[in-house]
Image (tube, rainbow over all chains, first blue to last red; front, side, top):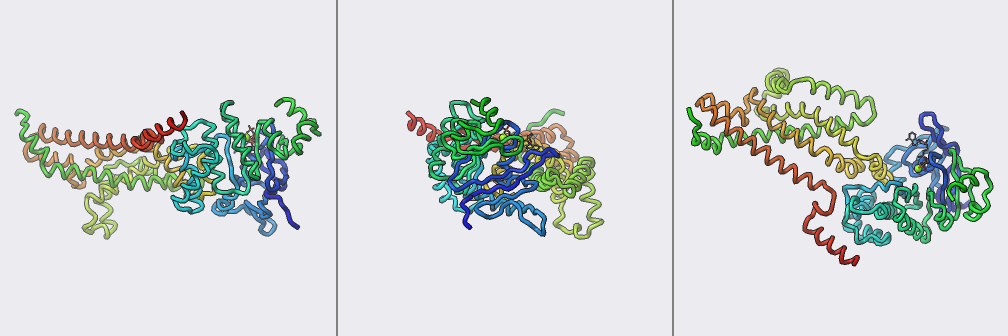
Length: 255
Length: 245
Ligand SMILES: Nc1ncnc2c1ncn2[C@@H]1O[C@H](COP(=O)(O)OP(=O)(O)OP(=O)(O)O)[C@@H](O)[C@H]1O
Ligand SMILES: [Mg+2]
């Protein structure tokens, strides 16, 4: 049996201090698919991405990347979380972009992009710089390469952050509300970069409040609420003919 | 008895004073390095959230914060060689005893500085490093430490200046640092004003030089393209403007 799912999430659960945040999340993302995730604040969207990026362990459930289980393994019927060093290796396959960019403030833009290449992939400084410059060009920032994050606008910082994740050539990109921290006039430039990335066939999950963006770019839209997936479908279906009451209510608020 | 400038200037350039000043600064440098290394591991232990690391680190800080530095020096020089024969050897000089003694005491304070510096680095920073697939050591070395150093730098500079002055405590273990040099001279000549004035000048110069060095170092951590490489960036900024217009 061949599966073309890049990422599979099976029955993911997560509690914080007895407070259930994820209550059995389950979905697949196929190769080249762009999945937009909508949902109210506090519904667990960021938590779900952090779990998929292996930044936090799940309480139960499995994550599979290209058919291979990651983050944990079965050991005599028990789930065993992999040690941090092994997780670090698996994380190279997964690109993560944060709401607040989280660029390294002590490094210039190009150095931010280079760090993963030099310190994770062990690529030489010279080669890493060339690749990083290439990537900065793709996000339209080659002329800002030697600027520090504090000298860049929010939109530029987020584009550098996208380049930093992309340069490691991940199998899937996770975006956690990439434009929520931006001034309205800077949202467009970041969405444009993400849209162009989608056109190249990158598999991605984008948590976003940008409904128009979701409709235009995503192949599949998901409503996430109360720690579970409420509705999932093609954009036209999701926006024009939602099946669930909660989706209708949510859409009436954001439109 | 009037202030005799000749005596004052003679002392100012005398080899004894120069050597004394060098010893004071030397003790301060070695003990600060020692304190930083020990303090770093203490800070890691205390921020680790693991009881078996937090316990010993707490104990260390508790102990060395309570004991006067003078007592530590006396123990280093007088008591330890009685207990440990290896320390009766020649290499265990007053300089070594003073540097290690002050370093051990200072480590308790440096651990506090480094701990709060580590804690003040935004949580999103190690998170981003880990998301790139960096190992825990790399995250610490390449992401967290550079940012913590910038925060720790100003208070560490103050500690260093404090250590230069604290090195005078080492007179009790017969280290001929700056203040001891002055005191010995005074005991022979009774020219208090001239000898002490010379010592004052040395301390002022040392601390001024350190302050300037600290300022230069802090500029390197400004993280703007303007201050780190003034010449190169002026061109780069100009180039940008040309590119845009
Ligand atoms: N590290 C944590 N410790 C304790 N509680 C947490 C933690 N992270 C998240 N939570 C809680 O889990 C719930 C879901 O948070 P999460 O950030 O995943 O929501 P979200 O859907 O991303 O919301 P938003 O749209 O505001 O970003 C919230 O109630 C939050 O308080
Ligand atoms: Mg969130």
